[in-house]
Image (cartoon, rainbow, N blue to C red; front, top):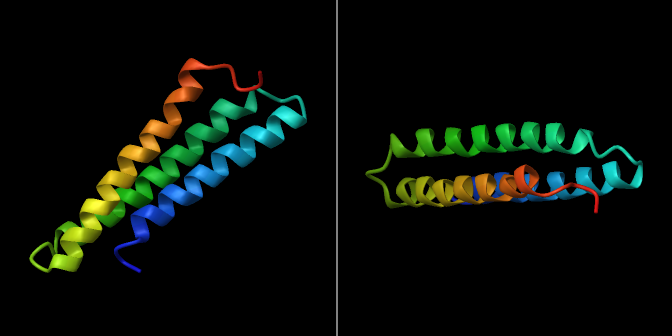
Length: 92
């Protein structure tokens, strides 16, 4: 479970931002999308960062090092998913 914690945070973020965007566009509320994606990104990023910090302290063990590395990649993916909200209109 420790190794997949970062990927789980990324997966929840991915699901949340697309679900919120779909619901907001269906209900004609595109103004809520940037705020919801920003909040989801902060929460998921904090979770991934917490995994990185917790596991990096025990990096002598291979499993801890791997968990921290996977969480770091997940943190990059979480940030990358938030970029389109800065560039594109949410409901097209």
